[in-house]
Length: 301
Image (cartoon, rainbow, N blue to C red; front, side, top):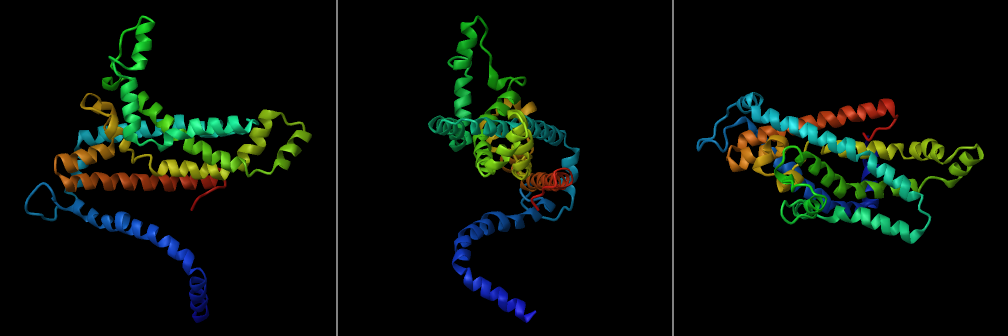
């Protein structure tokens, strides 16, 4: 045991400068992630709803499960989150494979730039772009509709159109990030594997199916888990683009928690909603990781 401790101290001394580089990140997580978690115990109190703070046990959680607004928010969260996953997740893989086939270097870089640049826009900017484009009076989309003889559509207050708008805006902003990661992974594949597949008579589609996809399997599993880790935590996009007219189809768990906790000043209840959301996210990620390990022989942890 003593020898192990000595070896550990020696390794720390050898890598002390690398460990120092990690210190700012560790401090950031400690100050802004872990210490604030201590406030979660307030979910067991009446903090925010009364001047006199007292322990109320599971009262906030019982109220939560009796609230129709909570079930509406939970339902909307599942619909929007999994719609984003279903429609978004395959696109970066497909785009990366297609872009990898571009042999003209300048054209390849131009396409990568065009696809990737929206990721640098904040949701405030993305929301403003879509609100402007879809304006019923001056938006370019409605101008095109009117040009072809149609009537202007109030997209942003339509319960029918609002969810598709959220999904499209999410894909437009996020798809470049995933595409770049898959392109980087594809570039590490040994070219001899493709040459061997050609010799065996594999066509273009078969080379993608039997060489490219198996080689990026671990990246696909990792990206799926990363997406699922925040699938129930959508907030920025919704809070920027939603309005009272579309609460029925856009109010999600985190906007519901925000509204109850800060706007209605029922902070303990808002924390209870946040805790339940985090618990559901953890269960989802662990279950997906287990399924990935079973069916793909790949897991992140």
